Length: 152
Image (cartoon, rainbow, N blue to C red; front, side, top):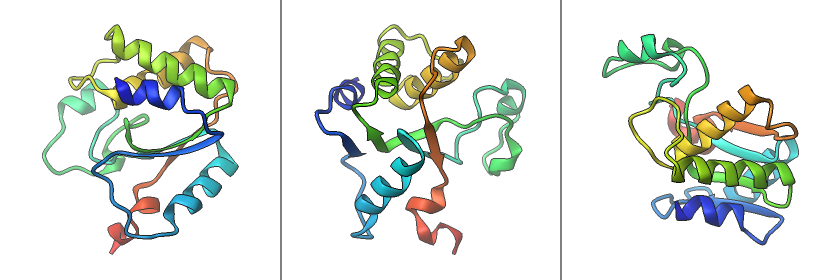
């Protein structure tokens, strides 16, 4: 994926990556998310409540059209359309390069879709299982953080 390669090789210390279909409704969002997220972690993505955890196949198989986030066990695949990165941190570079290799070799957890989101998630989970992601501070922010009108 060009996106993963670009993220891994960004020359800046901090990067806010936005997909081309993301538009900013709140002008202060870019600086706020860079400051807030990177004060707590080295990488931040946003949760995707519409996607179940790939770690619980039994619940995933029972998925109905309408569901709630608490119906699923385990972490959810996160959105990659908005990403906050501390690019110079070695753990971040290893994480992004690992995700790129997983996508390239189709070494992803049991998911149907095979995109950058799944590669990032697979690298996060499989590296943790193998004990290889030491030092990576990954933050998954709730949807309400970037979509304030979500809660009404």
